Structures are given as C-alpha cells and as structure tokens.
Image 1 (cartoon, helix red, strand yellow):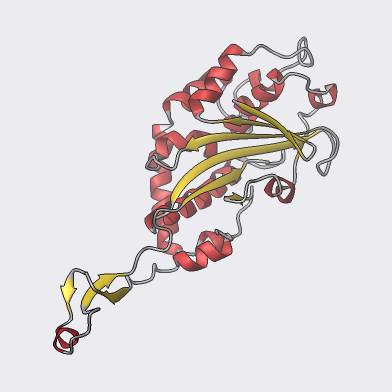
Image 2 (cartoon, one colour):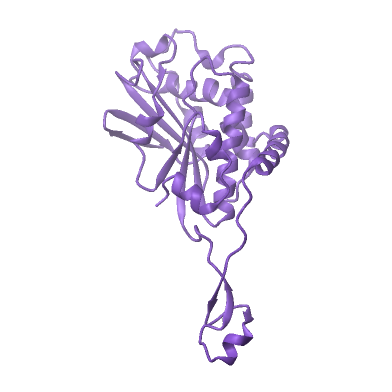
Length: 275
C-alpha cells in the first residue's frame, strides 16, 4: 500500500486486490473505533450487502454469479450504444493488398493498409468513483457499474491498455471539508484482460463500499472521532478528479447516459479528455 499526503488529502493506494486483502488481514481496529459499533460487521442487509466474511471471500475469489448477469447487461448496453465506426483504410508502402491502379501509375504508396487504432499502445488509468451517499440503493450502484464497465471495454477494443481503479473519497464534513481521505484500489492492471468476475464485486456489490471500505476506515490510523458517527461524507467527484494524475481520468459515481452510449473511439477519447 502506498501512503501519501497531498492538497489536504491523506491518500492510500492499494496496488491490487491482494494488496488490499493483505492489509485488511494484518491491521486491527484503530483506537478511534475500538469499543464502537462497527458498520462493516453489521448484519446482512439489502443496503450493505453480504456480511463481512462473505464480502472478503468475494473480493479475493471473484463473483462468478454476478458476472453472468453483468455480461448480459453489458451486451444490452452495447446494443443501445451508437454503432462503432467502420474500419478505416489508407495507403502505404507496405500493406495487406496492392491497389492495381496505383501500382501501374508508379505510386510508391500502392498498398492498402488498416489505419492504426486510435488508442493503440497507449496506457490510461480509469478511476471509477464509489462515493455514494447512504441513500443510494444497490440497484443504482449496479446500474452505474455497468456503464463504467461498458466504457472500459470500448476503450480496450480500440487499443487502449486500461488500468482500472475503484476510488472512494470521504471527508469529516459535508462538502469535502475537515479531514479528507482518498483511497484507490487497483482492480485491473493494464496488462490484464478485463475479468468480469474479478471486477464485479468491487464495482457492483454495495458490500465493497459498506463492508470492505468501511473496514479500511475503521482500521485506518489516526481517524478523527467524527467519522464514528455516520462514517463521514462522500467527497464531491470534482474534488477527487483534482487529485488524479495527468494520465488518469475519473468516471464519477453517476455517469451521464450519453457518455455511456458513445462508441466512436475519437469521440469517447475527446469526451473523457484522454491525452
């Protein structure tokens, strides 16, 4: 785990799911939360999802049952989206087929070639915010996760190598004031193909936020006592975005429907401000 302090934020970055589970298993409850009611260990509910031990297992082993459902939902999302642009072709000295009129005319660029995909060989980092208010339902979280996964899959289809993080920003005061924390969890590395079963739990199940990340808050050293009453306030996504690196983009907690339906790689990259 990487710990930094920047722009008034205390930031913890878990480099993988294994990094997170190892940290959880070795850290005890902080002095702030000792003797307090721990929300991460509350009974199973629609709001909080499965109990902590089950959440810990799903985080480590994947959520295969939900992945089947997500694959169907992603297929529906792809059908609703704008059609992908047709493959573009150009002319070059080398290619996969000669253009006879150009050959006869003595033009050096006489071979038909495929235009290189817009994102080929580019590595980008996508951060999906899970800064949801307590009033947000598990169904709403699932809907937003499908949008995020659809965007990541489209970026990879046009050649981008995508790091995918789940990020949670929380503060001790409403609107992002007071003590502020920002945690990142890498759920997919750029050199990995997207594994729906692996990313399903941290993105979709409310237990990732309301069990696993609440447990991170309960175990974090030096957490002010104000967090024991309600576990803080979600930090506005605009503030979280300001904490990201130059080659990182943020998918907010609630993704605009029009963004989720963009299929044209150039339009998607431009809308997301991918450099």
